[in-house]
Amino acid sequence: MQQTLDLLNFIKLKPEEKQIADKVIENKRISDEEALFLYQHARTNFLAVLANYVREKLNKDYVFFNINIHIEPTNYCVYNCKYCSYARKFKDKDGWVYSLEDIEKMVSKYKDSKITEVHITGGVHPHYDVYYYAKMIRRIKQILPHVHIKAFTAIEIDFMSKKARMTPEEGLKLLKEYGLDSMPGGGAEILVDSIQKQLHDKPGPDVWLRIHKAAHKLGIPSNATMLYGHIENYEHRVQHLRKLRDLQDQTHGFNAFIPLKYRSKNNKLSYLGEVSVIEDMRNYAVSRIYLDNFPHLKAYWVNIGKKNAQMALSFGVDDLDGTIDDTTKIYTMAGAEEQHPRMTASEMRQLIKAAKRIPVQRDSLYNIIKIYD
Ligand code: V47
Image (cartoon, rainbow, N blue to C red; front, side, top):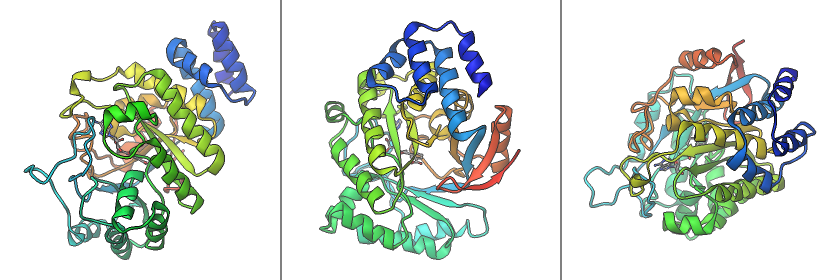
């Protein structure tokens, strides 16, 4: 930490940068205006050093990863999201639905493996209600009793609960009884009404926030994402972060914040292209500095590629998600580098060690399974 502080003294700071750095070092929270300044005007080397300071204070030199798989039960979806490359309608030839028996077969392959987590998310299929998904969770737990099930974005919970004439709160309670352990952070996009109205026809920011709040109240922790690099501007990003920081102050139920870079292949926003890697790194850093109440910042390597995820470790990131074993198609279909996303635990450890950090295998709640120092 001292080394990081020395580095800050070494950089000739702009007055606004100095003011923000002083606040952060005194454990004071930065304002929305200051976050906007960081996005718009701060130098990248300054952002890296300051975000690194925050990371070190919260997580030492640990970089967390887990051993996990995804299940994407279907890509049929009732909603139309312009940034999505994955969703299909019934008329399309390349849609899929896995039956509960298919899913049992998939997870049975991992009976003798070291996976600790199954992450489930997919399209919002018009036919299935919360009872169906509760059964899915129970059947997976019968085969893999020790795994943590992190499943269903807020929008999936909203739809499946309504389908069974329940409130999302009732739906969540049922899912918890059947073995749901936590919720992923997907579907937040940018939590600003005017942006979401241009992006999709699914329920908006209030529903996402309400369902995460309800989950936290029921003792179901979750993550939060931000889909950035499309039609939003920096003010929208700050508004998004503000809503998350406020909710976290109330509930303390979020584990990790996960920025998701908009990937531009095969969707209705392709004409926008993609933001630069420097922009990605700056976004990690500003998020780390602003979200002082989020314990972890995750670079989802499937979204930005292994090399960029490794670089993100110098911009505030302390978590690389999981080994995945080629079980997700969301980013493959959106043109990401990793067309068969899979890392062995040993590859993950090497990647982290090469960045001069300490690999730590974690469970889904960030309990340490093994430190590889
Ligand atoms: O909800 C969809 C986003 C999310 C694109 O909580 C896109 O641990 C970029 O949320 N470009 C799914 N992003 C992924 C997700 C996630 C992944 C890993 C870990 C966790 C966690 C959560 O991906 C969606 C949507 O917001 N998305 N299309 C696209 N073209």
